[in-house]
Image (cartoon, rainbow, N blue to C red; front, side):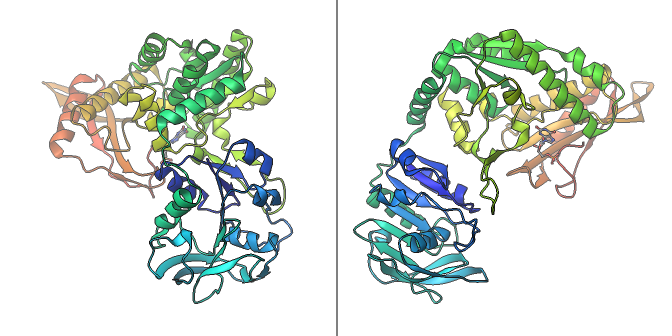
Length: 509
Ligand code: XMP
């Protein structure tokens, strides 16, 4: 394992990511993790990330100084280099401004870190304070226009510092520098695989859980499904999954979950059939945020009742993945790791004294998908499009009625079927139908109709922050439109949403 100590850099995730690309297992730790813990985890190298603080600030995040005595290689990046200077006895000069941008690094002293690199490379700088005097035992291995100590090394102790960021794309040959650190200096084997990860996680889950019981809220989405499969692999019967049928799911979704997790995986699966409860509370509600609130609160209520019915439960498992974990390194105050609140089932862990189990919290989305595949989950689950927690409630504009649910559900099923048939489903980010409470005139056979409108929303996106409508062939759209109008009673018009995000959003509510 390579430990990445997080001092609050926006690039910490990128570092962890780069290491995995070399098939080296990396784990992000809080900046102040005790050296003894790193040792216990068997780390064979430590990277100190950059960070926004100044080492002179009173609240500057400081690592455990003992980590320099673990006799494993250490690489300090940016703020990490200044920490080396500060802690190991060099001199750092306070700077009032931060400096960003490209620079040219002249490699002076061939270091193992710069193996196979040319004498000059373009690097990406972003730094505030600067090192002006080397700590004892260090030498300069590279300098830039602005700094005589842009790259430093203590050869005996295998401690390195870089003023620039090797992990960012703009640094030429940055990946070679990282490779040299991992493979040559830390002597990582680069043999980390998903199968190995499963083995390690299974062992860890078994050790953590012992003979106690775990509950997991299964949504049918990628993250909770993969978490369920992994935990089930580890502890089998000691895991119970709760799937809440809130009446706002897509066609055949409940059956699919029962079939996969119940019949195929033989998991303890509780399906909470509480559609009426949700739908009753939503009668007459049109405001999108109120819909969300009601659904969220009712979910917590239902989930809590299910947990009580199950009885002896010690852990609440969640499919939290790495990007959901915001490790905050605040300037002063309490440096606690914050978790996006939507992943916590409304304070349930505190109220019911449940411990949290998050076996995916070191993984990126694509790694979660690979893990899911390795665990035997089907493509339809592992590569499934995102679906909002409030479900079809936010895809019916205005009032939610059983009739409108039927319409949007059927239209959505037709779109999904055609998207899969033409192989578009896995190529776009999301594709779904939206019910518009608008009636318009049509003619079917000899009869005049006055029916509702379905809007098709099909978007491409990388991260849901921005999105654009997918340019699918007219013939395809025509087919979907015809089928919806012919097959879904109550619809006589289909429109295509051609808005981008921003200024629109992906969902209509
Ligand atoms: P918007 O509509 O904001 O959606 O562009 C961005 C992404 O988030 C999903 N989404 C939600 N997911 N609960 C969720 O779990 C919600 O209330 C919610 N609203 C939007 C949306 O499907 C898209 O992927």
